[in-house]
Image (cartoon, rainbow, N blue to C red; front, side, top):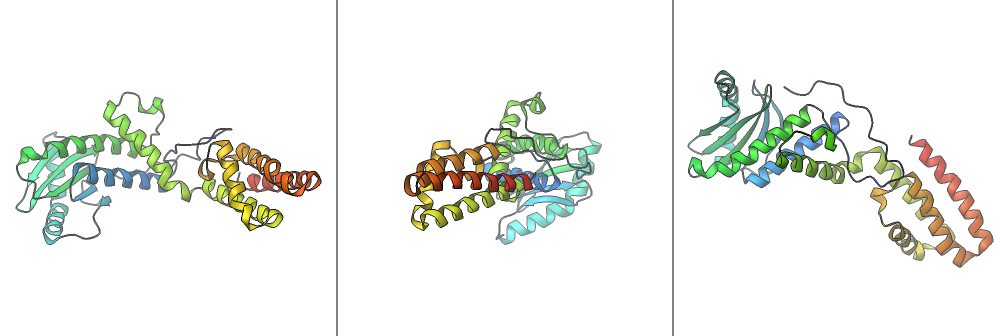
Length: 274
């Protein structure tokens, strides 16, 4: 069944390092990372539709192409109707996986956790033996989904004991979650606002023509980008901009004033996001 436990609070503190991974620390991110795994299963296994379903036929999440052919739609609807029966059969026979063959194609249904199942639907599958790769990839996906539904994280400690291919899958999901879900986090909003503040100050002091040059040079010197910035890096960013550009073009007095006022203003902005 769908996860009912309350979400864990907050993301791990980044300290002074650039953060390059992100845990599913709340319900929204949990849904996003489940969606990433279903999409990955559909792409990797070459299937047409993937469902994460309850034993009663409810669909918790799905990966469906934007356009469905008639055969794909018919098979998808047939599977949706049959899932409660198939799930009951799996539990009754103590099976973890079952392959059902239909006129339009086949479906691989495997148990992810108690009461939840992953269904991988493939049209024109050929022989059942041709589904071996789909079955193997679905089994990995089920173990990954079970880990996610238990609201466990991506640290080495929490991945201990899982098969190697499942650990690799979850680590990959962690990185993809960071890349694709990062823009919705408070950290992303903070970095956007701080970067825009600095861009405006550079434009006001040095002119629009030097904004990109000053920003790019500072990012390059830090060896990072806006996405991976944190509080300590932003303070160092200001120092680089002032020393490399403001002092050079506007002199020491202006540079000292900018360094003092910009640092103070950015410090207040950063504190407002705590």
